[in-house]
Length: 286
Image 1 (cartoon, one colour):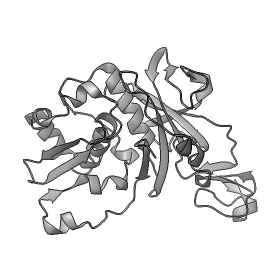
Image 2 (tube, one colour; image 1 turned 90 degrees about the horizontal axis):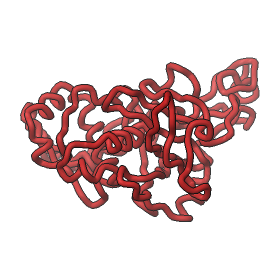
Image 3 (tube, one colour; image 1 turned 60 degrees about the horizontal axis):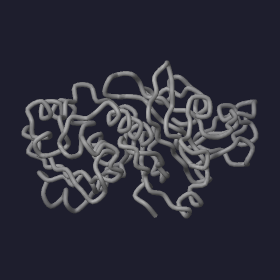
Image 4 (spheres, one colour; image 1 turned 90 degrees about the vertical axis):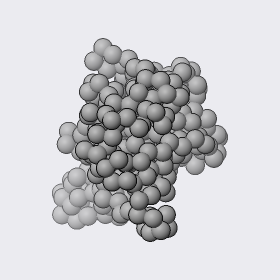
């Protein structure tokens, strides 16, 4: 299995009690905690200024100030920024000058190779990382595995295998935008979807305006996005509001998708008189 597979938890997930934390409260190995997931509430880079994801870039006054002002969300957000931006096998370490806590974040996808080596992030790198962050956001407190597909800012494909595509056989969504310039984050469905269906991931499939802010679901990937090669299992770019962005495409296991009428009242479904996820009499009663 490739490094493009991740296990995530959304908001509400409990922090694991790992030995590193218990042994030394001043040292936090964020790599052990990354499975707690990126919450939609923490999906913001307002005030973040990083001229390169290296020791020199992180140990600056501006980054320290941003990190100290966002202690509830910054550690986890940076874990995903590094995971998306930095190649697999590399780590980035930061020690807070305010609390003394030390954080180690693991790289994985390498979507922003220039930024990872100490350069300022290009617009394309900002867009690629933004799409990756949006793809990893989950509004539920659940541990969800998914397949992440797409290209780096330099155009290299994220590796994937036939086994990965087979295991994660349910197409889910595509994500794009630019979080760094406040242009917005967008999601679109990569599957036929009816109001009877619901998902443990939610943000890639729902059209509810208040469900996953700051991510906005705009409809169908096929409507806004294109593939470099029709045989590819992912979209390479999406165009919205007259602007074109690199895209990240996600797939999940079929068990992460529910349908009203399958005989089980899932946590994503509600009682009612209809046959939709929000009003599912067949599964949840009236």
